[in-house]
Length: 340
Image: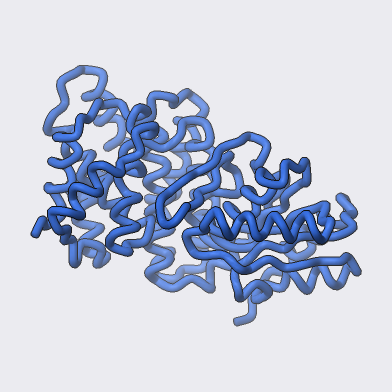
């Protein structure tokens, strides 16, 4: 596939020339040069070593292997091209190396916003172990929206829904402030205008959807995520649902549960505002998810249900505007999962 990304390659090369590194660690997936960024580095005559050996849900052990390469090769700059996993690996390598090395990120999905956040999502033997540090926010980002042409329809669906979930949760978060809410509102406006066009491969939707993802990332960088993310990770692990599918399902049914069990005026106002700025209700969101084919095979065994309940990230739950106990969490899972 030919990408019309010469202007982005030029931006990329200008940043590299400005920083003038001696050796670059290039962190990307196995198809790491399909967009031309590794070739761009080579064209500048700068030494570069690639690190591609990591999982879609990166394991801590893989990051440690990348850190060893970074140190052994004496790298003094990191470039990462790809989705959230590649960017999280690059950020975690910087953290593990305890280095002040700069990072240049080129996101190739419209979903995670990882190019502007302080978080890196990692796993240890399949269990989520995220890291957080303001020091790992990439120093530069090149928003090559032409790369979105490489995404399948399903990838567009689930990454776009991840950005949507980030924006909603950043509104709900107890850490939300005026700045994060502004980012959320702008992101949701773009989602409403362009998500369906993006799914239909309208190329005019590429740039605004990448901006939607970036703004959602900026929102959660301030406010952090809440209950939908906290409840999504075990579904992702146990059932193999993509992250975007798992979190969007959790969000839709948590939202419904909050409405049905709301007991304070403040929460009523927050939920009403959510409908206004998002353009959705829990019911219309649930319908969209089903229409997109994300509601098929929603089954858990009793043992899996109990593991999901035990595995909820308590830290993220504490950031949620409605306090849930374990019975609430079970009720929410049962509201959309068929328990065998």
